[in-house]
Length: 218
Image (cartoon, rainbow, N blue to C red):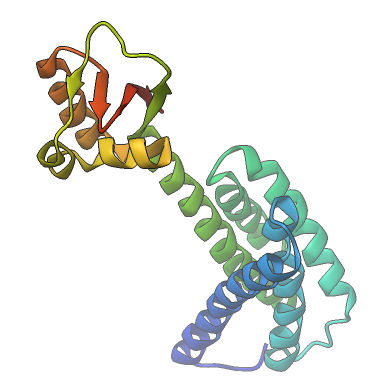
């Protein structure tokens, strides 16, 4: 790498970070436009990042990095991603471990160490955002419940009549009746459950129809 000051090195590392961010959102945008979702959409940012990273390294590095670098980084990133796929932040931490090992192996080769640093920063950004997104989704899932309302064909033995005031105060029940089911957070779940218990029944009448209210905790 060219002789640079510490300030310039920070800017270069920041560029590598932006490469990861740009690759991630570009891949998601293209994937959502051209594909139906799934694993391919999640993998699409990896080849984009590999190409962009190659161009940035060629610009800032003194050594001539061949285009083979793209295939090496792509293969490595896919393997790391798939290994860490079962653990939300697994790929991120695995990448950091490999970076630590690589830094020891290439401590006297500044060109390879520069490429390794660039690879780690860019792909760690992707894996970290992936992992954080999955972890947040899992947290929200574990702290949510589903409320549903099944339309009954006959009037049950026990029920109570829902008023508009009840539905305004407990909108989850309104959503369930209108849309058959809806997801609510645990606080709303508990509040609505307590309301039904106080009324003494999970069977309700709204208008001329009868419904059975169900709760499914994630």
